Length: 156
Image (tube, rainbow, N blue to C red):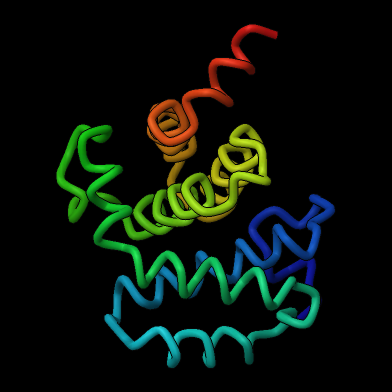
């Protein structure tokens, strides 16, 4: 099996950072469904086919950070969604945790890039219109977490 057949959206040129996000999402999916310790999830994902093409350091930061701050991240997301966090699909839940973590902890990455990456992950791995939902939630969250950056972007 080639790398092109293992990805939902094979035509995209994926950067090491994007691949790190893909693997972090897979790890969060595993964590959400199996409730395994983060170190077990990290070890499982690091052994996955194609991991060598990902930014391993960024992957570890995203996955460990999203898991360790998941309670806080869920609290920031909860007021912005139309259902209980537990009712989100595991993909939407994982993507929202990743996006919220990046918005909160990586101000060097423009908020529009964070949202775009989350939307692309949801298009690749989620349901039909899940990307629209993720886009709306993270857009609101960006306004809460990065009001100056969002306001400056709106003025352009």
